[in-house]
Image (cartoon, rainbow, N blue to C red; front, side, top):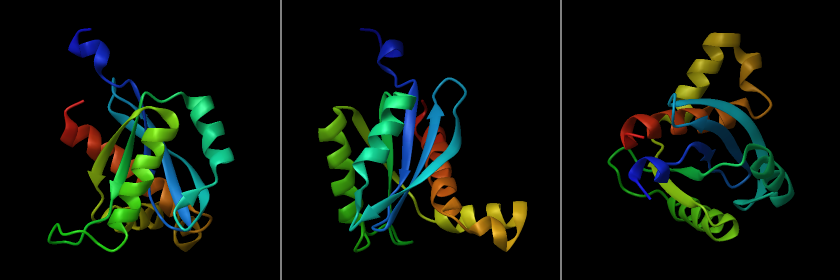
Length: 145
């Protein structure tokens, strides 16, 4: 198999949270991503039924999970939970999972949404899915895919 065929084509990105997980979808050809959904979670465990249906519909070749880090690059308390979520995805779906530094993506998502629609745009889980989109877009840039 040559390197080109080994590259992921459709990639699903996640902004991990213990109560909500933002989801975005993107593809490596145009290196573009879009916010997709925010799914409920309990202590970092997603609603698998909702996630399974998204996986079935979008058929990603790989996942990118944002790992929260402190500004100095050290892990936060929730970093290990995000990494555990990445491992759950890897074992459940048998797909490669890339981890991505997600510093400042939630802040950037809030700023973007506010600029587009004011305070009302910050409701209904929008921030989580836009943060997932930004994580995925940043991964495209940094990974070279």
